[in-house]
Amino acid sequence: MTLKVLDPRLSAEGEAARLAAPLASLDGARVGLLDNAKIGTARFYDHLEAILRTRFGVREVIRRRKPDSSRPAPTDMMGELSAADAIVSGIGD
Image (cartoon, rainbow, N blue to C red; front, side, top):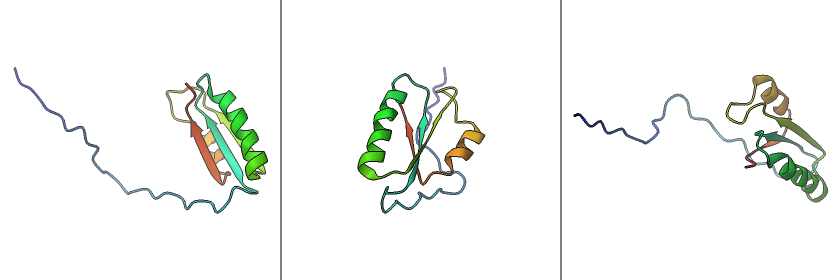
């Protein structure tokens, strides 16, 4: 019997991605909320949206719900969310 040991560390392939610069403020911003289609996400996002608007001055919230929690968001949905200044992608188990 042969035992094969695998290296669990992720290897770096391709070009490194850079994070976007942080927003100076959410006041007047457009924020995207990507719902992962789990049961608790919508209720959490209802509360989060209210807080973003009242306490942080967010002017617009773009909400989208993935059709399936186990798959990536469709390309057209990501295109719609790209109009946002910031995006929250959440898990609502």
